[in-house]
Each structure stands twice: as structure tokens, then as C-alpha cells.
Length: 357
Image (cartoon, rainbow, N blue to C red; front, side, top):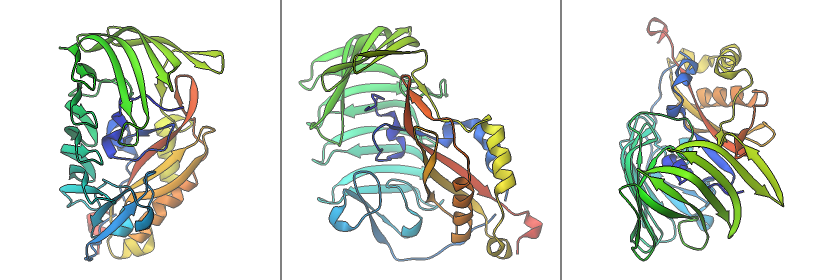
């Protein structure tokens, strides 16, 4: 299965595995009570280095690299396009083969926050917009690999849905020849998605737009075969059916995020009970926020646990240890089918001021 998400998950520039969607901690305000009050910081002055990543977003050597990022803290950088410390205000990712810019984004306190631009390998502008705590805000312009405008969409100023697939308006859409199909949010849209940064593989969805909102029936295609039919009323999803090897799978929810059994309160209790403040960090008054990324598999198993933005070795190791001990989650679902889901959880360590050395 390949998602037709309107590329909303590119907010973090995660070079996603197929069948995966990203859950951004900034989008889940109720997670704030999970950020445990526990730690402090250690600064390591280092020489700038290039850190290379393959197409899957995994670190690799230069020979097999797709993109790279220049950083002074390479051991903390696990995902391209992510800030390596809280002082970062601008992050640039480059294509390894040509040294051309892949993406430039502003960052604040560990999140993408501010204007950003993204480019194709041929140097043409791919996307430009604004993010707030790694969450799309306002208008986003997207372009074809040939440089012509593809679409203008608008994300809400305030979060109105925790789902990523249809939480935006489509205001303008044009085909690759420049013919305008959607104007002021109205028209019949044949919306294409380009993968791997070029036109070597495309997917599409077709449907009616009124005032930027999906209306009536929308069809999605994979490899020119009908994959799903979704029904909308004034932008609100009503029902859908997915086609899989001659079978029809009906669903009343397009996307459901993975959840810890028992919900956020149960997850908070587990972390509080399991986490131990490292002695070394306590001794030297080290605290900070560790961002831990992991994948919830289709069966709910938690795997691929890694720190994408760390503080110190001892705090990073403790955060990873705690996440590795978590029991299985309820898996994420898309159109009635379990899917792998990537999750980012911030765990904050903080010592009382009077106990800091």
C-alpha cells in the first residue's frame, strides 16, 4: 500500500518508509503532560561534519548517500532536516550527488518553525510554505518537477483534526501543462503525487471540490488500478471502501493513529514508573528534552527505536531504554488496513533548581 496523503507528512522531512505515516508530538497537545519533569544540558564544541543518509532516511556512508546535512553534533543527528540543538535557527539538507540544496527550514526549540523551501534533484522548487512546531500552517505551494505550479493548498491556522490526509483546503490545482483545473477552490481535480522526488512513479486521486473542500465521491488509484472510493459532504468524510484482490473492505475512518493501550494516561504512568534519572546526569546537573523516534508495526510491536535529537549519552540511553520496554501498541490504521506508523515522543528530563550542581 502506498499512501495518498497529499504529502502532509513531509513536515519533518522524514524520508518515509512506504506504508508509514508520521505522528508529530506538536499535533498532540495532550502529550504535554507526558513530558516528564526531570534534567539539564551539556554542550560539546565540535568541528562541522557531513552526515549522510540514504533514500530511506538512514545514516550511511558517502558512497550510498542520497542527501547529507552539515552539523557540529553528528552523533545526535538521526534524521535529515532535523535540528541538532536548541540553538539551531536554520537547517539545510543537500543532495549528495550534486551538492544542490534539498531543503531549507527554520527551526526553534527542536521543531521546524517558520518558512521552508524544498527542491527537486534537478534544482527546481518543489514546495514552499510555513510550519509551526513542525505542523503545516497557512498556504503551501507545490510544483511539478518541470518547475510549473501544481497546487496551492491551505492548512488551518488552528488544529481542527488530528488526521493528516484531508485536513487542508485545495484552492488551486493545475496539470503539468499549466491548465487550471481548480480555481478558488472549485472544480474537478485530478490530483497527482510524485514519489522519490521525480516523475518516475506517480499516483493520483480524482474528485469534486467546492470552496476548497472535498465533495461527493473521491477515487484513489495505484498503478492505474482503483484502490479506494471515499465519500465526503462539505469536506467531512462519511464512508469509504477499499479494493484489495477482488475484496471490498469498508471503513468509517480514513486514518487512525497508533495508540498505547489505555491511552495517554496509561502511557504517562508507564513512563513515570519506568524512567530512572541517570546518576551521571544528576551529578552534573544535566537536563533537557530527548526526542525518541520509533515505529509501531502492523501487529503493534514497537521497533526501530532511536534518538533523533538528544541531550547527553546517559539521558539518550535512558530514554531509549524506556521506549524499548513499552508493550505492544494498538497499530495505526489507514482505510481499514493496519499500517506501520512512525511516532516521535519527547521525553524531558529536568532537575529541581535547588538540586542542580
